[in-house]
Amino acid sequence: MKKFKDLDPLLHSQLRLAVISLLIGAEVAEFTYIKEQTGSTAGNLSIQLTKLKEAGYIEVTKKFRDNYPQTLCSITSLGRQKFIEYVNTLKEYLNPEQKTE
Image (cartoon, rainbow, N blue to C red; front, side, top):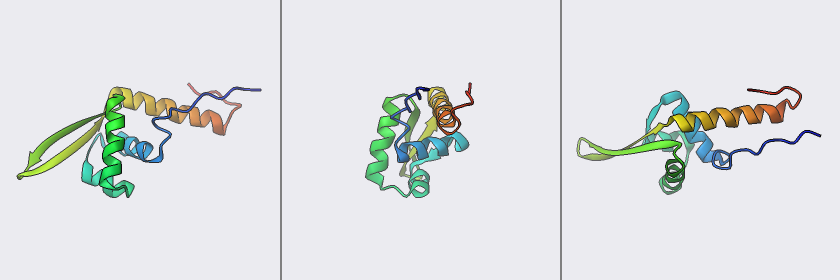
């Protein structure tokens, strides 16, 4: 029987996976955009962004725009790599007879 690879526990969280998925397509996104797209609360999103940042999956930049704070998130090369690995591992779960690269 084939042993399945472990899924990345950091990306296996629905909200963190949603954040990385958004950043894969957008490269950079504002906190408010991510919050709207995921339907998350500001507090929960902030906690999950911190976890992704501490793991090196994303970068978080805080600045001001028109005297209002702005938080920008961008995916790192590590985050991109980990997302691709996660997707490929899921593909192996869905089609265990076919090995992905």
